[in-house]
Image (tube, rainbow, N blue to C red):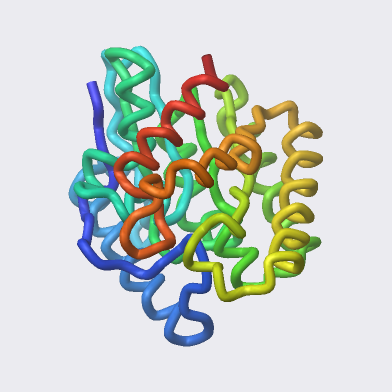
Length: 257
């Protein structure tokens, strides 16, 4: 059984695998997606009966027969931008299918979101789902927006702490940053400084993931095959294609077992 949180899939959306809008424009776009996201849950979720007036806490409707509840936290690559059909060909949906029958999928991917924003927008909903498995892929927006590494590290540590405190028995897998020098969108950038930033982010991610005893999904190493498979990137030169998402799902599945 598959259940999807992100049924709103525009054909065009702000890029997340690179330099998305900053400042007021970026915040406005995020607000639109966040509003749509909340409206979806207002229609698909049940509010607790003892909620006080003026206090609105969204609660994910549970799937009582689900063997596994899987929550995907992320941005537009988790949402599925770049796929022929983002709703059915995003990598969490493909991974859920690989995991077998009886999977209750809650895909929280929101285009333009950063890790700091996901702390308040995605994590509470993830915990309300009572997951057995959580994947987190949030780094490229922060890197592209020049978020200081210590700020990103603080937010990632906080995100994992909240997930482990709220879902102590869940397996948590965190993906790092692919080698962006292989992505066509970044071809105009000086590759050496870009690579140094990617490696600095990845070293931080690896350290925090290890400290929390979570699972590291090393897309930086696995994605080097992109040199031989340009078809893994969509026509926008930035996001994965349907084939790319299929490969990403396979990488996650291989690591999760």
